[in-house]
Length: 126
Picture 1 (cartoon, one colour):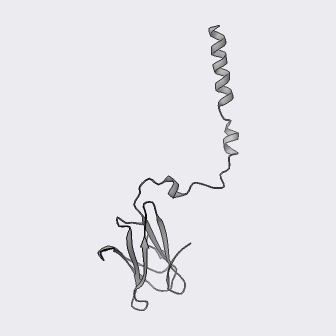
Picture 2 (tube, one colour):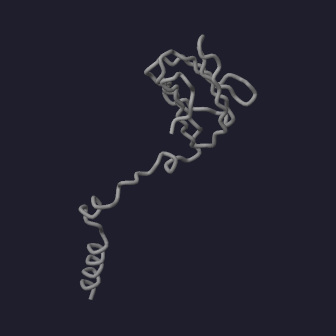
Picture 3 (tube, one colour):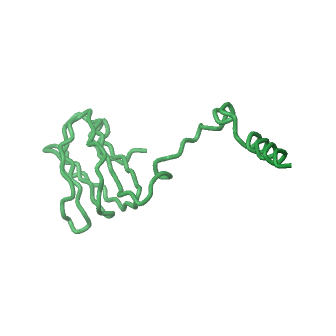
């Protein structure tokens, strides 16, 4: 009787495990987004300069304190910038295109991509 139970348990285990070919057949067309993997991460922004001129990137907090400054050359990006403040103003400026601003209200886990487009205009990327 003891052997019958053991065989029964083994049969249950074999029948309940997935075959590796079944795992490969699972739908992977919708990979998890970064926000689904995020747990209370600070918000981040990134500026990509697709324009024809270099820009100074300045990020101000709600109290107008400077949170980040960086020069972003054309055809480069700033890399991801982690921010401790949720209400910010992003400014892209140079001697010709002075003080383009985008205010943002960020939440935890937000990853916002900004762009200097080919016309040297600061926009939020899609």
